[in-house]
Image 1 (cartoon, rainbow, N blue to C red):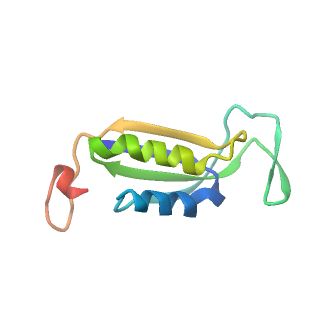
Image 2 (cartoon, rainbow, N blue to C red):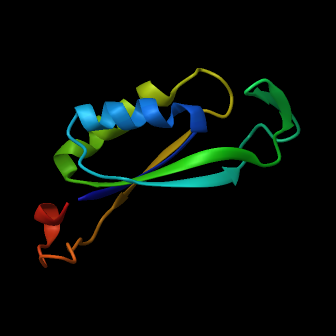
Length: 112
């Protein structure tokens, strides 16, 4: 199992969510976050307003997935969230030791 974390631009969330649903992702966690990357000291235009890039609004998506679906999820996020501009975000993939569905007690891939 893999745990995938993607940090993307907020206006791309609906498009990414729909694309992930189309490939079979059953659930995800989404959090509004702020951050910056390599673009320190530059400005960026977001929804018509110019912002200093010291802390930009972003969306963090977390998905737990089976090993066989993980690569497809990463590729889908990368293709869907890309604007080919600075600050598009990052995708991180971690090994997931275990997962348990609280309601039923199922574990492993069946809990996903």
